[in-house]
Image 1: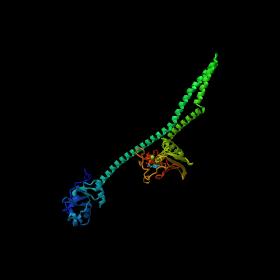
Image 2: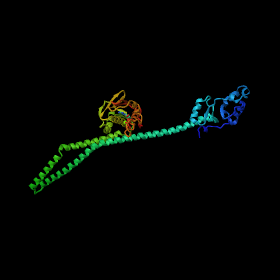
Image 3: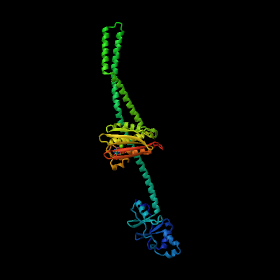
Image 4: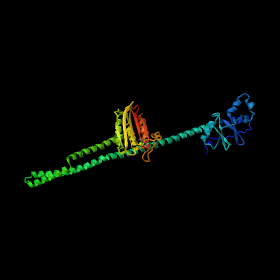
Length: 430
Ligand SMILES: Nc1ncnc2c1ncn2[C@@H]1O[C@H](COP(=O)(O)OP(=O)(O)OP(=O)(O)O)[C@@H](O)[C@H]1O
Ligand SMILES: [Mg+2]
């Protein structure tokens, strides 16, 4: 069913031959009380409308009824009434009517069908229908907005899971190297232990021969030779300094593993609330350690840390910021380059810059890089969320994020964090 037909009233139109007095009777009759206008139709074609207002204004003047009452209704009618084709959608009809209305609200409109009179529509009905429609649209929009928000947060979640997966793979690799040589060393210690058990047994046998009442000198000297040979072989196989080094290396490897585990724990701390006394330099070190696997094949990292005061921030979120910037820097380098990380304090802020000599950012892309999902990386490589998350985190910290880039020469991101947070940092970045 067409929209406008819902509003249409099949009203009996006036003939152009009627007089104003006759029309007054019709318009003022009980059944037509609710209409503001009555159409005048000549051989099917609407030629005007008579409004209650016009009629009343005539009848209220002295002798109005006597002077004009016998005139034809065509003299009183509005000869250019608002007319809309019934096929027009309601929105378009409403737009047309509101744009062309001369007497707002008191002017109803004629509905035609291929130019032939079809019925009347009232502006008040149209307004309330439009209002209902707007309310329905609002509900629909609200639903669409909520589902969009939901899928956005699902995407952000999967981006976080993907980067978590990447990070875990990197960290696993970092743990695997020391774990490999710790395992070797322990196997070696096991060999040493087996040889030592043999040596101890040799010495015990020698002691037993010494203690025996009927000690046979030949047997003693034979056992002595055997023990000496075993000891010499042991020393040759396992020189003392090597053995000492073995334990040193093993301990170092274990320390590396526990440092990595501790870092991982710090890095992904679930509490995202701001804490005071966070060292930005340490956050960068933390991110560098986590990003090591991605960065080490791509760039030498030059650290130029300044003496900076601690800030109050959410360390896990700031770690995430540096991880994003360092990953982007490494990914921008084709062969092998340099990433320079600098920190300094100035004007109530701590600043940190991450600069690379990678391929840079095209001028026309610069405006878009903070938009969610903007990426120049191939499908599966980048989701385009890294910088938008970074931007959001800094916004929530009342901080700043700036970028400067020259295509072919490199890019520099500068983040600035206020020394004090005036408000608590929100729980979630996105
Ligand atoms: N250091 C940089 N050098 C060159 N281009 C960069 C650099 N950092 C960001 N960009 C550009 O900005 C785009 C958006 O970066 P962003 O970190 O938001 O997403 P991404 O790295 O493409 O994907 P994701 O971070 O989700 O893996 C990148 O695709 C890249 O074109
Ligand atoms: Mg990125």
